[in-house]
Picture (cartoon, rainbow, N blue to C red):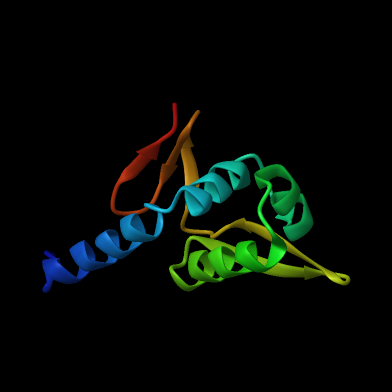
Length: 101
């Protein structure tokens, strides 16, 4: 059965791609491809202040690209269940395949 509103799936894809147009958010997703990471680990690896990183992580969560789990006093981030590495260096976003070189 065809999607009754193909524009809605296009809109979702456009939103995801807009979110990933930011280099920091794109770098976070690429790091999460290797496995879950704590906010402090992401901050250290990216060289970004934790307050700025928290904003980027919030945007990734709201878009359904990442999830956060409480780990004691820390927060552990991972790729959202629907965002899985599809190939060696690619993520399946559901609407398209994002490949990293």
